[in-house]
Structures are given as structure tokens and as C-alpha cells.
Amino acid sequence: MADYEVRDMSLAGQGKLNIEYAERNMPIMLMLRKRFEKELPFKGHSIGMALHVTKETAVLVRALRAGGAVVAIAGCNPLSTQDDVAAALAAEGVAVYAKKGETKEEYYRYIEEVIRHKPDLTIDDGCDLVNALHTKHKDMLGRLIGGCEETTTGVIRLRAMEADSALKYPVVAVNDNKTKHLLDNYYGTGQSTIDGILRATNTLIAGKVFVVCGYGDCGKGVALRAKGMGAQVVVTEVDAFRALTATLDGYRVLPIAEAAIIGDIFLTVTGDKDVIRLEHIKKMKDGAILANSGHFDCEVDVASMNKEFKKRRIRPFLDEYDVAGKKVFLCGEGRLINLAAAEGHPSEVMATSFAGQSLACEYLVKNRGKLKPGVITLPHAIDDRIAELQLEAMGVRKDTLTKEQEKYLHSWEEGT
Image (cartoon, rainbow, N blue to C red; front, side, top):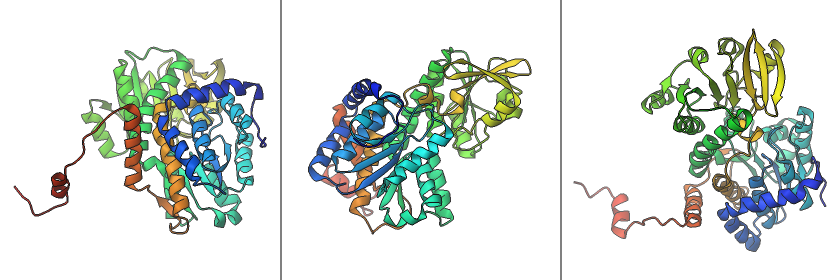
């Protein structure tokens, strides 16, 4: 039994059932696990992880362990851990440090526990593990083969480190895989965010003015689903092309200062901070609902809200704020609502994302010593292979090119 710190080990039985249920919907991860068991690509290596400890993540952990890895994992968000899954992993011998509702002190201590296991590879969601290694454990950087980053926010931080020449080992931006950002961010975030808001509030979406702050892949997914449920969608953006895209997609685009006056539900999903500030909240309607699906709890200025307004908890994941007599409601303490109040992305979506993590780790091990420190992209052939595996799992058959078609696509001589 490995050392661990979880909420309640008596939940392990239910956690095991939930992991088994996730596996049914993640057949490509089972395909990879079967191959890893034969080839043992991670034999002799330790993998340190800071990810959302969910049933889907447990399937990834099982695959890496089947490939010979020793795994230690901490949660990457204080509210995203599924306590039954954490207990089940601990019962299987995984060094897991995660509890739903953990304090900020516990959160960072758990990351330190993962580092104590001296990882050769890192898998991160938000870059906190990478950051801790670079700021507090510089003596360990030389032993690291490489790492993987799961989310947009983490890749933003990594590219900032790279620009400052601060990143000291190669990290695969798994978020940049087509099979991640075009599936996980768009389909996964779109569905699971609405799920989280509904679980927190049980509000009616139809007829509401739903303000989506940020029109990247995540924002596009949320906007489409809110529209499909009958909402009047308003988009706020700082990027000209994305604002143009949102307009051509049929949404009204406004500055947040104007959207704040008319919105009923607000969702931030930008990867930046202070997107919704006190000046905006004070303009909002009585009964306005705020939620966030960006990685950190700084997109809505929750810290200032807690200082400025009186609040009370009225539902497990819903706080009511008194704003000069009006009531404004904040979902999930401003943290990732799809994981704070719901279960995160569907297993089918996470299968492709975690296939990317698995194959990125294998790629790093196979190319040890050949990759320079910095942010790198997984080769397209590997990304395409993930898509092929998912199609196979879904029973979908696609066309293939003839020899003549392949020649035509690689030729410049044949014209009109």
C-alpha cells in the first residue's frame, strides 16, 4: 500500500465501480493499456501528476501503471476531486493526495508530496506542478525527461516560461492536439459547463440572456449549447478575429461593461484574470448568476466580492451575495463549475485527451535526450492515430486515398 491522503477510504468500493463505468466509455484507453502491458514503455520511470482526480483520470493512471510506471498524483483544483475515486486509487496502491474541498495549504502540500516521489515525467493541468519544480526544486530539473500539459491555461503559462528562458525541460502541449482542443474543449467543456451550472442552480436556460466571456474553443462549445437550450447568447471578447467569428456565428458581441447590464447568466472561460470585476457586478440584475470554466478562480474577481459584499451559502455549490440590496449568485466559489458541481467532461471525450497524455509520455521516453527544453507539439501522426483509434472504437469507417489521389496531393505538375 502506497502512502496517500484522501477523504474517506470507505468510499473505495463506489470509486472502483465508477472507474469501471468510465472504462466502458473509454475503449481507446483500454487498447493503449493492453499494448503498454506488453511493451512496458515506462518501466523504471516515475510519473508525477497534478490532474483532476476523476474516474476518467483513474483510467489514465491505470494505463500508465500497466506500462510499468510508478505514479503519484495530486489534484489540480481544490474542488474537482471525486473522493470515491481518490480512495479507489489509494486502495490500488497509487500514491494519491487529493480531497474535494481541500484548503489552499493542503493543495500546495499535496503537490509537494508528488514531488517527493522524484518524478521522471510530469503530467500537469494548469502548470502548478511544473511551476513548483522550477521555483522550489531546481535541483531536480536535470533528472526530468519531460512533461505534458493538459489545458489552455497551463500552455499559456508554459509559453510565458519559455519566452523568459525559464522552462528547463521539454513539455508537450497536449492541449494543442486536434484530438484535445477540438474535442475536449469544444464538446467536453460545452456540455459539462452547462451541466455544472444546472446542478448548482437548477435554473431554466431558455429565455435567459447567457453571457459567454471568451470565444475560444471552450467558449464556442458553451455558446452553442446555451443557444440550443433556448438562451439568447451574448459574447464578450478582446480578440478581433474571435469577436468577428462570434458575430458571424449569430451571436451578439458586446463589451462586458454593457453585457453586465442585460445578462442573466455569466460564464467566464478565457484563461485570464479579472474578466468580471466589481464594477461589472454592481451593474448586474437582481438574481444574476455567475460561473467560471476557466482553470483558475480569478476570472471572476471572487476575492474582491468576498471583501465587498455579504454572502451566504444557500446550496452546496451556490453562494448568494448581497450587492446593495440586489442578490447575485456565484457558482462553485468561482472555480471550474463543470468539476466543482458536476463530474467534468464525459468519459468519451476524456478518452481522446488522455490518449494524448499517454502517447505524449511514451514519445518523451522514446526521444529522451533528443528534445530541447521548451513547449513542443505532439507529431501529427500520433494525433491522427488517436482519432483513428476513436473512430475504430465507435465503429465508424472512413475513406482512404487511392494511389493516384495521393500522388495528386503531393504533385505540382498537374494543373487544370
